Image (cartoon, rainbow, N blue to C red; front, side, top):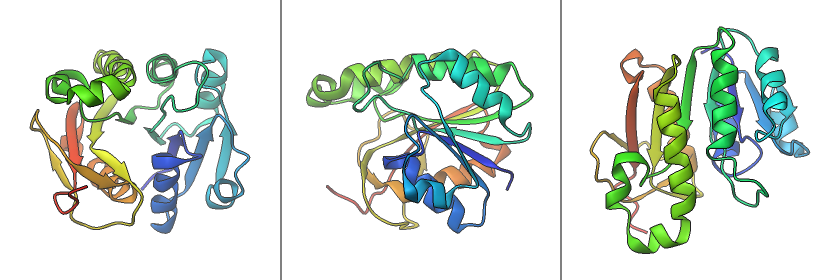
Length: 209
């Protein structure tokens, strides 16, 4: 596989992606608001510090990337002063469109876009604002000329690859999944040209809570 560039690489799902792809022998570039993470520096072939709410910073990083790189974004607004879910992704999509980089996989969440109606009221109250921001990012991406794939994972939990996570294009999906299992499914999608311009959900039916 070509170089994989991961935005949001310093923690959570992004760091799980870094660990997964480096174990597979893939050259990984990590991009995050804070790259002062010894583990990240050790794992990645290269790191870039970038505040995705700053359009100039995003463009500078993207222009430094290999033109045949595969870009993945797991960026989210947890502990961020300014929400990055839509604004940061709009900057990233614009920057990618200004270069020759085409392949982009955006990780959002269940409840985004046309799956909003199936999100529980409790979830809408708890993190509905972030889901709505991510939905805007999905819509913006779908009008771009990038070779995109959108992945909406269920509730994320710490854990290793299980090989039992399932991809689905059903609108109503519920469940949980380990972060590294999401990384495995991202790898699967990136190797399939049929996944371009498509939206998928993923959960692991073996995880019940």
